[in-house]
Image (cartoon, rainbow, N blue to C red; front, top):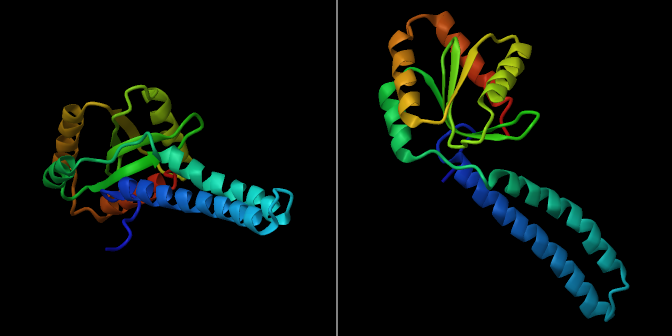
Length: 191
């Protein structure tokens, strides 16, 4: 089984699992070097203790990567099926963590058109206006002009997706190109 790309369903679950494994391995190496120094030199005062202390820094960096992902949730398979049925011609991204200046926001699903980006999150405490403005400003710096909408209710999100799908002209090459550029620009914001 291959690696799941960022933006595909299941990416966040795989990334969490891999980061947890890397964190465990990194700290196991730190402990192994320290214990080996104790066994060989029969004292903590040796160069292997120094090496293990220095190895804590990269291990901690790996652990931080895991803890950033921990509070965010993956998209359900049911939602993926519904979005594929309702909007087959629109760009869909799943399991994203979008960064901003305050704190990262976990996004279960994202629909992208030539004019609009709609995201669904289950994080109720997220500042909706701040999130929308930060994504809008980031994409504006990338020379992309799109409106950004954030939803916490799946039914409202699906109604918006249905409306966007009905109004999208898949035959217009300029619209499909702009949709691709918007998707690529949004992915630059993701962890």
